[in-house]
Length: 124
Image (tube, rainbow, N blue to C red; front, top):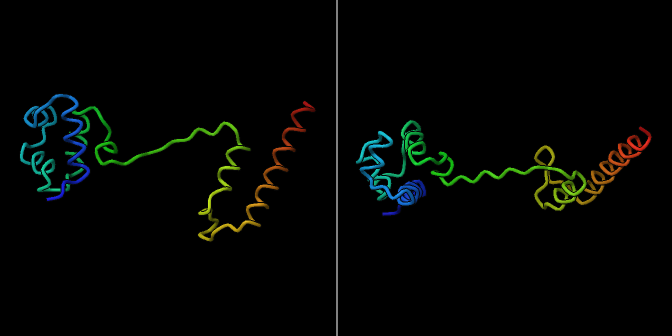
């Protein structure tokens, strides 16, 4: 029987806290059988209400329990960011892949805009 990522993660976070299933049941208010079945692969799903209760008890997010990685980026250098974006082979506009010529157009347009801003700032 294959254990879901949810089951593996609940077990991992529970053990990190040094908790038994009974302790997680007590802290979350979710039934022992529900927790046991998920951790042991007898069930692969949990309703959102119980998922939130378990996450709160374990002091993790529901995304962490589900194994969903959310990556956030802070853009501080627009020119460097554009270089990275334009290197992508999967860049699309309106569902159509951007060609190398179109990438060059975007690069030229962006460079023109950045240079215009820089010149204006020097005048100020």
